[in-house]
Image 1: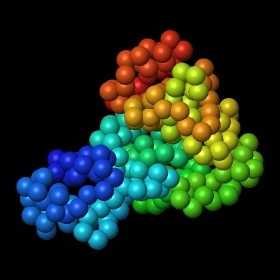
Image 2 (image 1 turned 135 degrees about the vertical axis):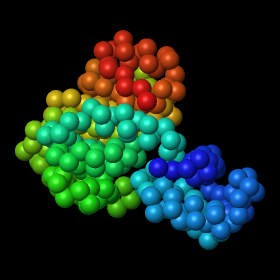
Image 3 (image 1 turned 120 degrees about the vertical axis):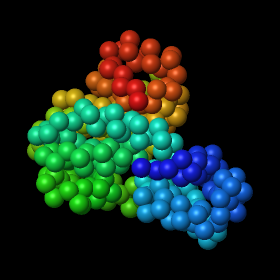
Image 4 (image 1 turned 90 degrees about the vertical axis):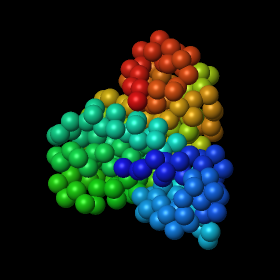
Length: 248
């Protein structure tokens, strides 16, 4: 768990995408040694990237850098969603920063089969030898560490999925749920068609945005998991479409 000061560092980074040791020392009223220790810890947790004299959040496709944006909200969502997973289930975790945190929460569930299209997410289970991890094949995207393409779809055809957890980059009434990567979108849509129970997982900042391509509409899924700060108009819209709203 992060302490209050470390959470404040992530909030500062979330606003500006970069910060310096001097700035943090001044704002948080602690020594530069303490700030450097905090930054090193946060980098080890995959929540930011250290640079000379400070830290940054810079690559939109790099899950390591995206984890630190709205971290508190994402962690709340991940903890809430993890309670929907039971021992003995076979679940698929797609890409997305909330899904990384979900994977970490699922380390507490010993007997579960995790299927994923994301190598970074699979690595979260490296210390849980009892978890059954299946990484689907495909073309490797270096920045996002996601696997895509025809081979990935062929792998999906061979498995039965109890629950699927899908990340998004945007949602609007007209465009539905959208993401910015065409290749990942193809796989996400295919997973949604195959899974028995689909959870869209995202913090509320993605709602009201429209990205490059659609992956599904509310009628195609069963649940949306997000933080409780989501605008009430979106909550009402999704509930009216028959979606189960999971608010953390």
